[in-house]
Length: 185
Image 1 (cartoon, rainbow, N blue to C red):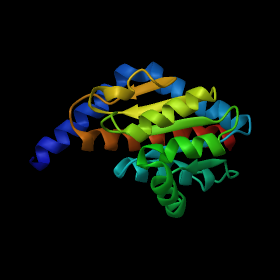
Image 2 (tube, helix red, strand yellow; image 1 turned 60 degrees about the vertical axis):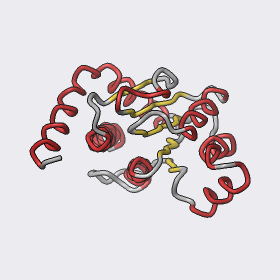
Image 3 (cartoon, rainbow, N blue to C red; image 1 turned 180 degrees about the vertical axis):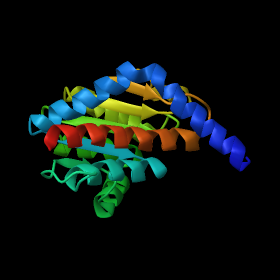
């Protein structure tokens, strides 16, 4: 794909997010409500989406733009020892669900990121969160895949580009962090 074609795919995907403003606002409201109640954000994804999950949690525990207190958030991808232990003992499909079962508490919000929506470990993470009664946010791409409809709030980036989906997910992460900064400073 040429530079221009990649750029156009990303711009179209970003512009397409406007049609999902209600879901975006609802997701931001869930994040804010959890943090304001002293609960935590739990995030997970695979590959580039794992990096984005960690990006979200570092912005919350550290800071985004404004100095504010540290906020509780954990990326289920960040502990390599734990991920490999769970993968070895329970299979890779269970690496996020098992952590949600052990770490999540009532009122926490689980954020899953996936450009395909078809990763078994993401589907099982959503199921584990639902079983615990947790609100969930799914940042999805490529039509949402099998994860579509499984979260409290779905935000499905329009288009067929996994790269554009991830770029839009990062944009959304920053949008949510701007809302958090405003609420906590």
